[in-house]
Image 1: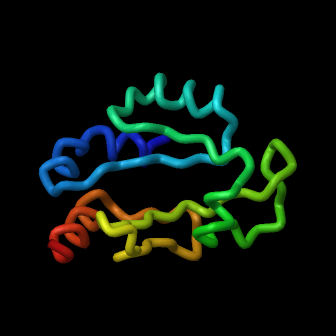
Image 2: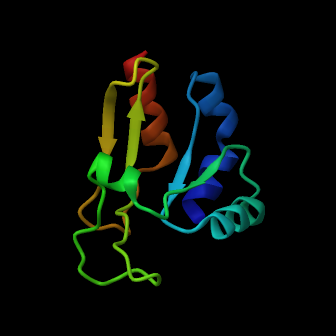
Image 3: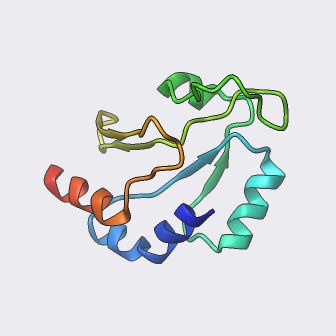
Length: 113
């Protein structure tokens, strides 16, 4: 949830850059709602419990360790999609614990404008 907190803290910077933030989790609707309330995100936290978005964008974790619900884990991935629906940038570290910083995210966004 730390990463969501950083996106929440810098949400106005993303808005200024013309970016809409969406968080997508493989958690069910109730857990996604709980996370949104706990973190206080000004952006949607969506549920992909059926993992269809994960399949579409190829973000399945390489680990064979099952998620608590028995399904596959989603590998933490940041995908920047432009207004035309074209993927412009993907950040996915081989080590799921390493995330891009918000400063890095914003720098990539500014490069595309």
